[in-house]
Image (cartoon, rainbow over all chains, first blue to last red; front, side, top):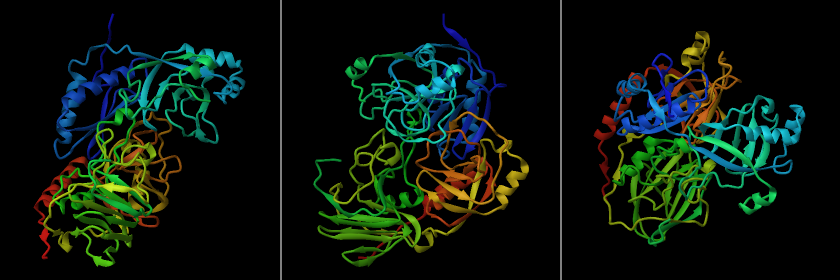
Length: 236
Length: 318
């Protein structure tokens, strides 16, 4: 049975962001469907505004619409957005994509597992189990190419960022920061708590799809052994 | 790089930061890729126009200068942007003008004395492979240009073989003056209405200085601290020019290589034409902000476009 969503103009707000950008806030809070709603609006506006569109950036409760101000203008773009917010915004959510990602959880591949277990008064195995139980929404992609912000993490294992970020977080690191979880697609500096490693490439500039997920998709983590991790191309 | 062309410039000295740029990378925000593109778009456009190139032709953007190239072919180049000494085989030449180049010519661009971004365009553009629809180099993302990196000494930069082109220059009166004290027009937007009125007044009334943290990603300013009552917000899309107010109250103006999303409150966004001038500024330069509406911004952009189209280039007498 397809799920129906309806967004009224009352809930949504449209604000000026810059000379070439408007930002739509669909809600003040995240709920179970917010990412799917935003993805739907993103697809509709990509079509509706194709002649003047420069970029669309979905993130949590908002969608930033960047347009060419020499091709269209503030009024026209705003009218197009309002049309999609007020008229017939009831539509079946057809995106039920759940992307399964393998993770090698261990204190070696996830150096902050023990600390999370200690602060949340759980065993390491319980932390690993709780992280895998949820299906996460892809709320946003940013910070670095292909870096997906997933949520929400079970409150029992939610852990604040490290006081001092690491200079080098290994590529493929699965991490937690507060009620968010993510995977670092490339080695980079970072302050999230590391709990495991994913062996799959998550940003491929020369292959399609470039990233395995988009805003509106769901992600589930599947624990794998060290042997399986290495067999899938993972590196320790 | 296009291997079919054996026309190139050899890089003898790449200077501080030299990257390939075109108009930028668009419609890739959903992958988390930023736009890149020329820090000073106006100077970039003039460089290509002096050669009658399409507007999106790849050019070299130099931050602060210090570039030496040797050509192996006949071609034409044009230099715009910051004031810096251009020499060809040791002979001083005019900026904001196109120049003929012959094999073995050495092109040297000194360090900028006014402004900091210099554009070197070549007839028909540099031959660079596009990534995600653009050649623009974003070093932070390792995307674009030559393997996502800045240009380094020893590289061969492939160019097209072209016919002899007429030479043009931009009249002195039309050349931008890169001032080190700027007034930036800012479109009020994003969380503007959530800031306290007193804080907004402080923001517009005070002068800010450019800190040492200024690059293609953004310019961090120092001056009167601005407080927001916005304690927690979700990360959201950031447009070019957005002015973030982080918890320390010191504004950050975000530019070409900004991250696509962020969770700090924003008080508005700088007009693109003024952002061009800001990106020519360096540490210690001074700026202040002036509020404008989006309608006013659109008027300015349309007038500027009309002026750009009506401005005639002058033929250089041979």
